[in-house]
Length: 502
Image (cartoon, rainbow, N blue to C red; front, side):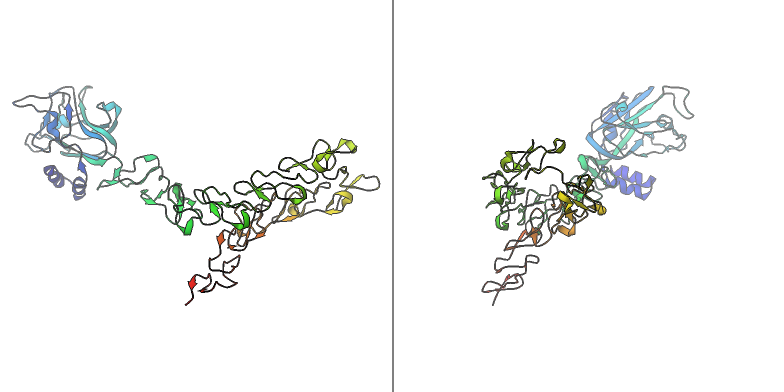
């Protein structure tokens, strides 16, 4: 091998010397085969071209076709192939007889011994006996198990200088490269390319990006700055003590901060009793729900229970029935089928045009009409019975529906409900609430919690969604900042009562 390196260095530029020294010769002492073998005083077998000695050569009989291959031991990342042809110990020029047998050769890279199954790396169409190099260096940036040398004289007339028959006359074939999933002169391991594909064998870049949790041109760096997932685009959730999450799936190694739950701690606790933190795995509330909430996570809102009583905290049923005009186990359905009142037991009267009556009080739907003959619709942004109700904050100042007061195009920012008369709570970053139910898409601002972010933090809680507990040595903290504005327990001091008094 070192003799080949020296020869290449004398024949080629210094850069090539560096390249040959850097890559491993994958063909050295590997199994080889040729289409025929010339027998003289000794047998000139195919393996002589991969024995590391340029003075021992593999030679075949002179025939119409000549083929030779070397098995690399498995799929390899090939960079270049160096071929040392026989010289007969004579100067390599146009007068050397061996040049005419070398002209027209091809090199293939394949995963089988059949060249047609592989890719053509090089085919000589331009060399003459005067200029064909020896050794010849061929760049072959492909993957494969076999390097196949092929030449033929099957389609005369042949180009000038070509022999009428050809032969294998290979003194050394060196195949330089690396194992698969490596790159560069030093065969550095590829990073975590998406789908486990091979990185670029020269630069190490990944053609289809990185696996989740990895970034960088070579996909060799884990996500940082509390990010995770594909292209590190996902932000970590509310992990305990501000710890970074797992770079691949975003899970929090030590659980969630109070007020958050789930694998990634991105879910916020529901309406837990007294503002207690929920279970950080499943979001369940250990002491149940505040009045008005139900379910395992207390995120469901009770229906219209009789006299405003709280519903069952597990299933939302109403123990003493529903308000007038409402029915169902959870008191969440309005009376229908021309009924109204308590338990929907009352039948509507003979309303005009067969219209159903009001589900609560049984009045007929003549609301929205006025005039002696009841033939005029409410106007001037009024609606309802005798047009006494004023429209709410409808979008772009549109008038509301003259009967129900509903806004045809929704509410202006800051209002919600069917009639847009309800005002949004304190949503995070002052974003508008949902114009149907008043919920805040991204949670609450500091100091408040609840579905509509309009409930002040319970004593002992503060911050966004009231998710943080006051300091343990605090006699009561500011619901916005957490500062211990009512003083510290005896023996403690500091803004958060975190320092022992001396």
